[in-house]
Image (tube, rainbow, N blue to C red; front, side, top):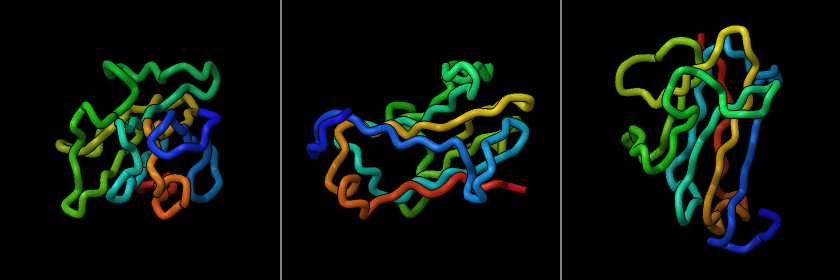
Length: 131
């Protein structure tokens, strides 16, 4: 984790706030856009965590994460959109349930980070509030 070597180890970018700087709230719906070419030589994962206990969010889903091995739905341009919120955004969407009365935070785990991660030519989007 402390090593900065291409294709070695893992990096864990995290966010506790949305694009407006507001703390993430389980009662709000959000979208995280991951542009095409996620810089992971091995695999990647997006996980929601309880802001009080720092454990995986106990959201009623088998795991509070979506990762490469889940074969998430890819957008036509090769990017991914991950949705967060107390209600499903609809069939066929990559969705992690949140809990209305709890805050949460998100970690993007990148295993085997590639050059694009280190030179910052690839960056995840901000957590965007949805109406």
